[in-house]
Amino acid sequence: MAGAVAFFDRTYDEALALTREARDYIGGQGASERRAMTPDAMLVASCEEMRLTARMTQVMAWLLVQRAVHAGEMTRSQAAAKEHRLSGQDACLSGPVAPEVELPARLNDLLSRSRNLYERVQRLDATLDG
Image (tube, rainbow, N blue to C red; front, side, top):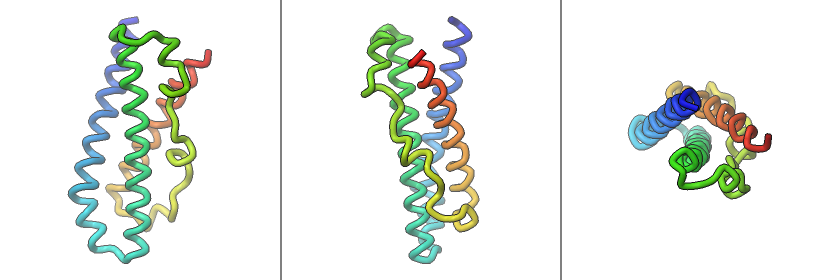
């Protein structure tokens, strides 16, 4: 069990750090980059930033439920209820609204890392069915 908790803690720490990184990008560098874009590119970047936010919101919500289970605040069966499962697959896993080359490199990096994390958490969520 200690190995599972360490794995969970690392995943939680990674997700929290990525959430903060995304927040800082969207409010800082991303805002500056959007101002220099064409209106169409700005719309695409804004849509992808919303996807990034959705992914991180879903991942953090799921991880907080798992943290509650580890702390004894929820049972595993409660955590397996539909309302506590990872959701948002349609938005979080759909393809980009435009080719990646149209987006700033930093945003592409955050999108890639957030998708990888979302997919990893999705696999963990699927284990609740077994």
